[in-house]
Each structure stands twice: as structure tokens, then as C-alpha cells.
Image (cartoon, rainbow, N blue to C red; front, side):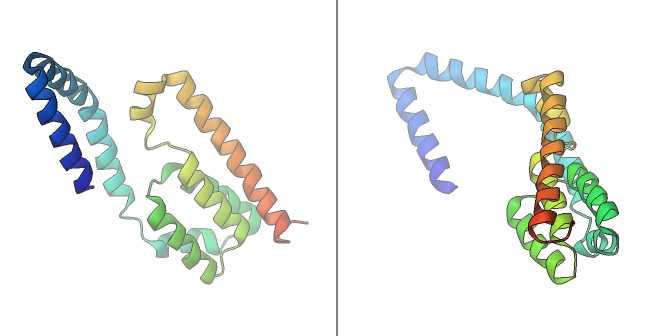
Amino acid sequence: MYSLYIISFISLTISYFFSKEKTKKSLKIAWKKFSKILPGYLKLLIILSFVLLISDDIIIKYLGGSGSVLGVILGLISGSVTMMPGFIAYPLSGILLEKGVSYMVIASFITTLMMVGVVTYPVEKEYMGKRATIVRNIASFVIAAIIAIATGILYGEVL
């Protein structure tokens, strides 16, 4: 990460020596774009901080004790409204598996967690538009449900 900062700083310095006006102008444009994004991004960070308070015990309680259909539905819904990075989500799926949660429920939870962005909706609609964001989220939700059912069939949890 630091290497990107160093490369950016060096590039900015070189640009400044070649053309001071263009560099200043580009920095002003960048600042305007950043200030436009900042409110939505801050909302996203606030919502994300509340979501991260959800522990794996709560997730296991609601996903593990349920039957297959109810567990999949709860997995699809909770994964859609939860947001966490992959390096936390994938080990969590291992913990869920160890606690006895079925593959189909884990697939529904993790797939929607990575593909559906209810929490990121405000930021996403600014860039892609309201309609495209809604269509993408619905399509991702349906695909996640199909993946969960296919996982259940492959692991013998369905049929």
C-alpha cells in the first residue's frame, strides 16, 4: 500500500515540474470529485461499522439452527444486508461449517455477502444509476439463490 503512495507522490512531483498549472488544475478537479464522494462514503463507513458489530455467534445462531429452506432464506437475506471483506467472510464460512451449518446455507450467505450490496446502495446508485443498481442487486440475489440450490444438490442436501 505504501508503494502506491510513494509512486503517486513521485508521479505528482514529476507532473508538477513539467506543468505547474495542469497539476494544480488536476488536483482541484480531484478534490472536487473527492468531496462529492465523501458524504456517501462516510454513510457507508458508518453503516459498515454497525454491521461489523454482528459476531459470528449471532450468525451461527440464526443460520445453524434453522432447517434447510429457512436457513437458506435467512442466509440470502442476512448476506444481502451484511457487508464484510472476503478475508473475514471466507474464514467465517469455515467456522460456520465446523459449527454444523449446511453447505447450502453457507453458500447462500457468502454468495449474497459478496455479490449483493444493500449497504452499498447509496454509493453505487450515484455511479451506476438507480435502475442499474437495483437490476444488478436483484440479478445477483437470484444468481446467489441458484448457486445455493446447486450447492445443496451437489452436496446431497437437497433431493
